[in-house]
Length: 121
Length: 288
Image (cartoon, rainbow over the protein chains, first blue to last red):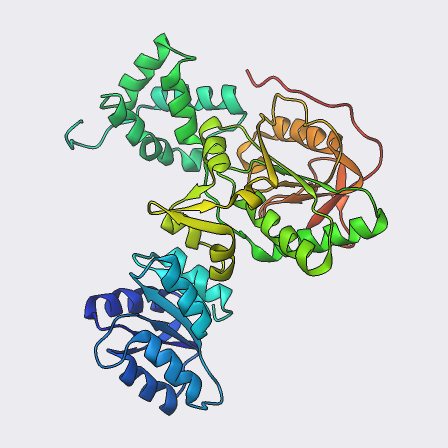
C-alpha cells in the first residue's frame, strides 16, 4: 500500500482527501501545516504529499523549499492541491519542484488521474 | 424554470421512441442495462423545455422530429465521456507506431483519424505529443483529422475550451501550462495547438469515410454502442479509410475478432489492429 501525507490546515479538506485516498487504497497520514509535514517526511517519508498552498506556520511553498534542502534520501512526490488556480501560481509551483498540481475543488477522478501521472497510483 | 418535483417516470414506450430516434440519427443503441441513463441524461432537456416527463417529451417530439428539440435529445444521449491521455499507454503506443510507420515511408506526411472524438481531448492529446516530438526529434507533424456525429460536441472541440475538472483529468500540469491559457475560469487550447487538428462532422454509420487514406485510425469506445450489423458496416468504412498496413485502435473493451476480416491483430503493436488483405468497397448502412 502506498502512503499519502495530506497537508492542509482545513480539517474538512483533510477528511475529504482521506476518504478519496482510502478508496484508492492509500494509507493516509495528515499534517496541519508545512512544519508538521516536514517533520513527518523526515521521520518516515511517504510516497506522495498532497500539499495545500496557504497554511499557518509554514506554507506549502516553504515546505517544498525546505524539503529540497533537507537532504532526505527518498523524496516523496509532491502534488499541490490548492485554490490558487492562477497560471502564475502553477508555474511557480512547477519551478519550485512540484510534480503535479490539483486545483480545488477536485473530485476522485481528478485526484486519481494526478496520482497516476506521478506514478503512485 | 421548473421547480424541483417528483422524479419523472419513463414509460417503456417513451424510452423506445427516444431510443429509436437516437439509433436513426447516429446508429447508436441504448443497451437494456443502460436504459436507466435515458432519464438522467434528458433531465436538463426536460427542464429547458418546460416538460416534466419523458412521455410529454415524446409527445412534443412527435410534432417536430427533426427540430431543435430532437437535436437536443440526441446530443444529450450521446456519451461524451472522455479525458486527456485516456489510457495513456495507448496514446503513447500510437506515437510509437507513427514513428515506425514514418520510418518506413520517409518523406510522406502521416495521416491520423480520431473517429468519435467527442469534445476533442483525444486529438489534442495526440497533437501535443507530436508537437513535442517535432521539437525534440524533428518528427514531421502528422495531419490529424477528428470527427464526431454530435455538432455540439464538435463546436466545443473546435473552441478548445475546457472546465477545471476536464483539464485536470489525465493532463500533466506541465503540458497544461504549455498548451493552454486560463481565460475567464476556463482553460483554452492555444492557437498553435488548435491549428494542428481539423474537426469535421461525420456519421460513421452513414457518411463515407473522410477523403484519402489514413495511417492510423482511432475509434475508441464508439463501436460498443452499435448493433452488430451496423458495427460490421462501420468496420468496412474504417477499413476503406485505412492505408494498407495501417493501424486501427479500438477501446479497451472492443475487438475486431469475430466481427470483421478487414483487420487483424497487429503483431508489432499490442492491442492494435492492422489493415491488410482485400479492401472492401466503402460501405453505408441504413439504420432506419
